[in-house]
Length: 218
Image (cartoon, rainbow, N blue to C red):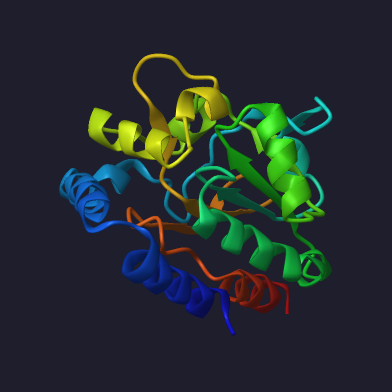
């Protein structure tokens, strides 16, 4: 089963068996609002320079994009958080393809707005062998054109589901999240591949990332 198929299966499960109809209506309204706002207009496209950054990994070491691309292409994956089942499916799919990504000469990092201890929990739960970086405050995600504000109704809904974003992300005031997105960045720090989708149940399949890297290397 591909990760795309696994995500579709999870979507069907949650929408038909887990999430109440009233809650689905709130979530669908929010997705529709964001789609109408052309939120991804500022997404860096292939050929454009990617913003450099400096973010802490799970051990507090600073990781920069410049250092990542020094030895080859870097795969950057922005995810909402370890509380999101679709994010976990995608992260596990990336882990399964990690050896192939590295064999193609690339590195891989995942980035979320979670506090470092939350990122550690996500990494351990999914047994990830690649760096997970904490972008608290969404400063880097904002530079990649991915950040959006959640409605108070959706924030409260997530809280009732046990996902209090102010605790997970250490945010006060308006809650924000990044649109899930994947990028391949070249050694010159220019974007080679970019994918983002307002529908958080949709992700760039790791197999597509691997095929892109392998084709480029051959």
